[in-house]
Image (tube, rainbow, N blue to C red):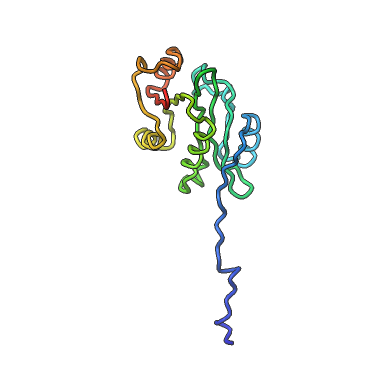
Length: 172
């Protein structure tokens, strides 16, 4: 056998690590510690300490998370109120934004929420508002006139609308 016929497959194969969406739900305290440990270049700030949120949104959320290898690379949160869900953000680390993690997190969060009426404010900092909204529409979130939404309290809808300028709902 000639030297060039010998192939070292272990050195030539590149095995791509898969992104795992954990089936468990995590607290904001866990997310704060783990995200900031794994991603010191992309700080997570607890909701209670965020000036970019209206006061009705400054309460801890619960989260589904995306893991790649040993690293937390994304999360999606929500706050369960009495009769509805207030979505609490979705974030993917910039190094992993081309891997479809956003969609996997949306699916995981939606499977946890089920058919409970949900409201989300559009507060994107990483892409155009139009692109962001189109991603949400794929999962059934739509813009509705506040007067046509009966299940979610009007004061919540009005506060979010006034603060962000754009809200979307699902099952409401």
